[in-house]
Image (tube, rainbow, N blue to C red; front, side, top):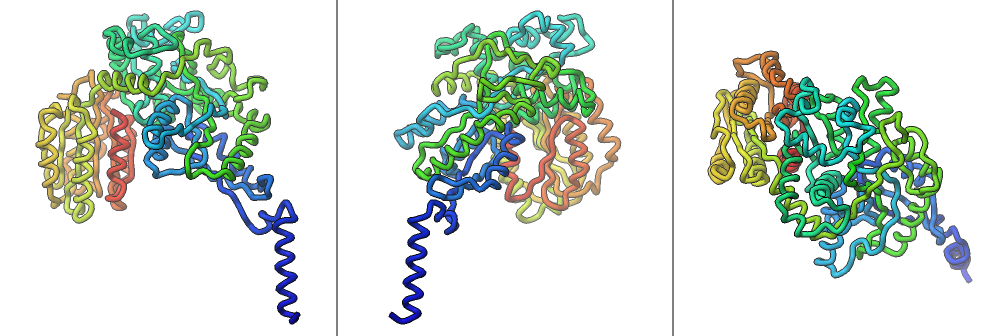
Amino acid sequence: MPTRSLLRFFLILLVTFLLFGCGGAETIMGKTVTVTILYGSEKQGWLEPLVAEYNAAAHETADGVKIVIDAQAIGSIESVEAILSGTAQPTVWSPASSIYIPVANAEWRKMHGSELVDITPNDLVLSPVVIALWQPMAEALGWPEKAIGWSDIFTLAMSEEGWSVYGYPEWGSFKFGHTHPDYSNSGVASVLAIAYAAAGKQRDLDFDDLQSLEVDHFMEAVEKSIIHYGRSTGFFAEQMFGRGPSYLSAAVLYENLVVEQEVKRLSGQSSQLPVVAIYPKEGTFWTNHPYAILNAPWVTPEQRVAATDFETFLLAQPQQQRAIALGFRPADPSIALTSPLDAQHGVDPTQPQTVLEIPDAEIIGGVLDLWQDNKKPVDLVVVMDISGSMAGDKINAARQSLVQFIDLLDSGDRLEIILFSTDVTVLAPLTPLSDIREEMEQRVSGVSEGGDTSLYDAVATGYADLLGDGDPQHIRAMVVLSDGQDTASTLALEQLMAQLGSPMGEGGNAPQLFTIAFGGDADADTLEQIAEATGGRQFFGDPRTINSIYAEISTFF
C-alpha cells in the first residue's frame, strides 16, 4: 500500500476510534448543543450569573456533547406571544408565573392540536404577588394586627376623601398602581385577584361571577384609583420607591422587589419611608418561575436532555440559596428562609396563607374582558414635531406610526393632537375618540414638514390643556415627539419646567409626559428632563423603531 494511502488509512482508523470508542469524542470534535431560554426578567439578577458560570464550566451530556445555555430576559406575556407567533423558538420558556400557561396551551392547541407545556414544570424560585404599601399607611389601615386586603383598597378607592377617612388628610388621595394585564404577568395576577376578592372566592371562579354587578362594581372602584398602567413591574417599583408616597400610595409588586428596596433603605442607599408587603387577606398568587421545556417541534431530544441538566444545576442547593440574597424564596422547601426574607425587610415568611387557584383560559379571558370594560380612561395629548428637519423618512414614519397609535386607544379615551414647527397648531381639543378617530387619522396622514422648532411652546400648550380640560378622574398624559433643538419658542426652558412642576402636589395623579427623542439630532437631555419632571419616561426612536415605541407607551393607559 502506498505510503500516503497507508497514512490516510491510519488517520481514518484513529478518527473512527475517537468517535465511537471514547465518551468525550463529541466534545473533541467540537460538537455542542444549545439550549435557548426565554425567561421573565424579574429573575435576571439571579439567573444571568448562573448561566455564565454554567457555560464556563463546560457541562456535557452523557454522550460528551458540550451544553451551551443562551438565555434572554423578556416579559412573560411578550415571550409567549413570540412563541405562539413563531418569531421565537426557544427550548425553554420560564415566565414569571404559571398564570399564563393555560392561555398559552389553549392557543397552542388551536394551532397544533397539542399542549405547548404538556407536563407540570418545576418551579425555579418563588415570590408572592403582594401589595407594596408604605409602612405608615399600612399602620393607618391597622397593619400588622389587622389583615389587609382588596376590600381596603376598594374602600379607599371609593372614598372621595382619600386618606382623610383614616385621619390623615395631609396624605391626599389614595394613589394605586398595577401593570397592564395585556402585557404583564403582575397585571394579570392583579385583575384575577380583584375578581376573586369581589366574588368572595379562592377557587372555582366562573362566568356567573364575572357577570355579577357586585364584581363589576368592585373592579371599577379599584381601577378608579389607578394613576396609570404600564408594561413593567420593575418600572412601577422604580417610580414608587424613587418618588415616594406622594406619587404612589401602593402598587402591586413582587415580594422580592419589596425586599430589594428595604435592603437599599437599611444600607443607606435610599432615604424613603419603610415599605411593607401586604399579602391580601382574600388571597394572592405565587410568581413561581416555572421551567417549561416546550413540547414544540423545534425542540430536539438532545436539547431536552441538555435543558434538564441545566435545570438540575439551577435547583441544586447552592444555586437555590443564592436566590435568597436577592429576595426570592427557594423552590426547595427544605432550605431555611433567612435574612433578608424577614420582618426587618418588610416581608412575612409565613405568608401567603391563602393562594388563589389559577383559572382556565376562558375564565382568564373573561376577567381580562371585565377589566377592559372598567379600566381607567385616558385624556391624552399628542405633541408632534413637523419642523423642516423632519423631512423624508422621519415625517413619513411619524405620520404612519401616529395613525397606528390612535388605533390602539379605546373609544372612551379622549384625544388632542398638537403639531408644531414655527407655529403651534391644535388639530382638535380634548374630545372623545369615538367622535374624532377617523377625522384625526385622516388629518394626521396629510401633514407636511417645514419651519423651525417651537418645542417648549407646544409642550406648554398641551400641558395647559391637560390641566384645564383634562378630567382628574382619568389618566392624564402627554406624548411628545421631537427630532431637534428648540429654535423658535417664546418660552424659555426654565419657564416650561416651572409650569410642569406646578401640579406636583397631585403626585402620581398629575399629568405625566412621555417623550420620544426622534433621531440622533434630538435634544435628548431636555426631553429626558421634561419626562422625568412629571413621572413619565423618555424613549429614543427612529423611523425603524417608532411603531414599537408608541406601542410601549400605549401600555401605560
